[in-house]
Image (spheres, rainbow, N blue to C red):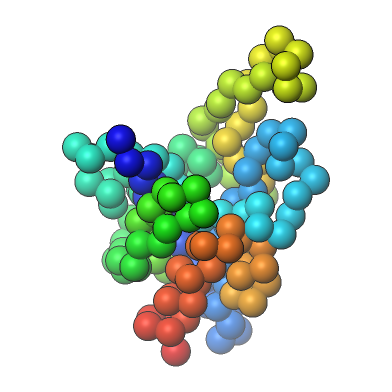
Length: 154
């Protein structure tokens, strides 16, 4: 089964400058990582589900916030792992300090310890300028920001 995810690239314009909202992966593996450790809020979906529906669901699960509006489809990107990410840009706003991840994963930590911890998929969210976001985001997802700027903002 192919791996695929769907997500939302939320953006806002403050003082004529574009900012994008990204989330940081939760858990001990990502704890001290910053550059390349951020992502658009996204999650996996199956072939039987519409990608946009999955993107909206995953945004809510990872941030606690519902989104709606005029979604702008972006070109899918392929991550290093081979996973295809389908994304939509949406103009909106969210209080980054108030996000609440509703989904958790169970991992063995420390590795081979036999101890299982339940951790949130996302531990924080933040607004970034587009230049800073392209440094923070998973490198394959930077193309989503470039497309947002190129096609829809300028």
